[in-house]
Image: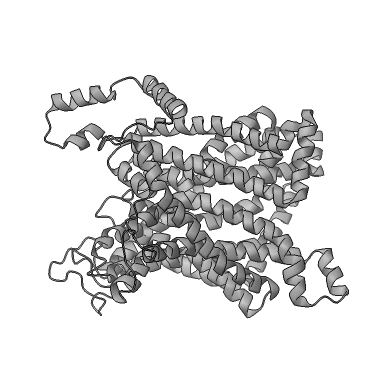
Length: 326
Length: 288
């Protein structure tokens, strides 16, 4: 198992390097001059040129790329923002907790509502309840998150004046963002729970349990649910990683000073270093969350754990083992 | 020879249609989408006003009989703008999915069929793409390409391409081992013929389902891009761009935000339900 984790951690390095190269190259082709935006339209051409030279933006592509890679991977330094000269690394780290908090809170919220819905649907297949739950989950994945956020603001902040519409500060500030960010996850969670539980309820051991006269409630909660829970829980962990980047527009709607808001501001200002830093940071988080998900999965399910150990023992087939794990 | 090949194909399509007809909700959604597309296509005939007709005497009007969805900050009729905007939103959703499926299918088929080194290289490149959430990738690419109809389609399809490639590769890997592929190899069919005639048709089912739901995802993605200002440039009405323009008036004229969002939600919901219906019709085993 340790070998597997180590292998995955090492494999993250080439992935992140490749992501860095990809993002750097994409940003290299972004039209618009950041220095011009920074200094305003009235600045003298000579001044702009001097500033560009000072920032090293006139050097050729590969020199800048190698420099950047060196900074990121040896000094963990994402460079300085072209807009205000502040350190991108510091900005990212100071903004990370809020982005993370919203991702976690909204996922927890979604799990609390989605799981029971999924269980009801699965235990009453093809009933009205099931149909309603499935329909609800389809509606959930169909509403744009940022639009739902705006509607919630109109209802709860502007009409009812119950909750603040922007910023951070108290717990109340987090309610609307988490609600709108979690809504789609509720739907996904309902579907996931339903399909996993339906599958578990078809297994032979359920028939055995029924045959020996176990009450239906125990069949669902003691026999089927624990077996269905593994993919459900790991799915949730994976969701947190994806949500952090997925919430960037919602962060913007609620003016939450998280990484998403920083990223969009950086894109609009052509702040290369800000965009690159934020994207690489997101990629890193996603890789780590995926790794955690896979490890959790392996720990929860002895069969998968055995698979990894088997493949690492048989050295010749180690490659194949990794292939199927990926 | 030709007839005997064609006959079973038609029946499988007929079987699909018969099964799909039983999915009442999906059929209803299909009808809604067709009507919606028709209304948008015929917008010049149906729309009561032109989409860029500015009326300074009727700014920010609430819904009324003259303007059933109200008017926006320049007095333009929101209902007419939604009709015209639907042309962009629907076209972007369908075309971006088509492009994503096409490119993804090509790479997925190559990777899945040839295996070995080719497979490894393609998959490793896709690993890099997948290290980024697809919407992030779309945002970045669209900030390079700039705003516009074609650029939006490209940006969105790049984000989704990898998913289709992986899906097709996975189903090809499972189909490849089935005897009829071996038989085709044995009688000397070329690789291209085996891929196109034998493997892809049998590996298509999950792709078709995914693509139907993909249209829904792309419409949502397009709305997101437009909302953060990377959509179609200003005077053209696109649903996401309408939301983006309306968000500044949330405190004073919230009605401007409601209708474009409702249209997006209805459209996306319909595509999702059609996708569900198609899945059940194509493969009843998948239905639980």
